[in-house]
Image (cartoon, rainbow, N blue to C red):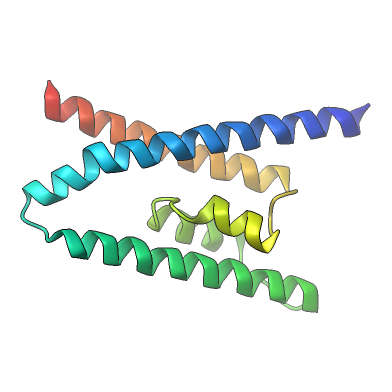
Length: 132
């Protein structure tokens, strides 16, 4: 019974992560990029930042997966979450599914969900501040 309950919790958290990921992408496109463009930051630098941080996320998660298979000292969850947050979570879920890393650990998914919520709340407050 507890295994089934855990599967439902994981499914719910994964669904919430997917919804928040889509919402954060929409907010990024319609709030953050226009704000940065209004500050005269070149568009190419925003794309370069997102590409660079996505590559870093992929590299870090892949390295941690490799270390876990070897049974050696691994990258801490705190560092994984920090790298993910710095990349605005653009590539985190895709990378996790592609590498099949940290997708079954419920506590990590909950922490990632909380970071997503913080990001979405921050972007929504930025949107409200812009248009109010």
